[in-house]
Structure formats: structure tokens, C-alpha cells
Image (cartoon, rainbow, N blue to C red; front, side, top):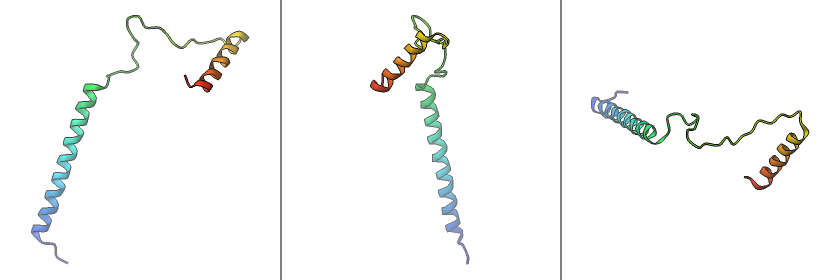
Length: 79
């Protein structure tokens, strides 16, 4: 079975075009991600930020009961 030179060049040209388009689209997606996504989304906030999570001491019963009540409210309402 012989493969013609023209058929080989068509396949090579298709492969080259496919690789070029893949690299071009990857570059565009990378540029857009760098422009719109924050560099470090977990950095410490500045300004009038309020800490949302309070670490509780589980040795005290009232703290643990409040935590359980808040968790039940979360499961009921989803908030």
C-alpha cells in the first residue's frame, strides 16, 4: 500500500493547522483568564472587612449548642 506525496502533505498541513489553532486558542484563553480572574483570590481583605467565621471552643456547651442551631438553620434554609 503506497501513500502518495500529495496525501502525506495534506495530512501534514492539517496537523500543522490543528496545532496552530490549538496553541492560538490556548493563548487567548490564558490572556483572558489573566485579565479577568484575580491573581490571588484568597488574599487577606483590606478596608472595612468583617470576619465571618468565628472559631468556637467546643468545651463550652452554649457555644456548641449555638453552632448546632446555626448548622440546622443552614440545612433547613440553605443560607
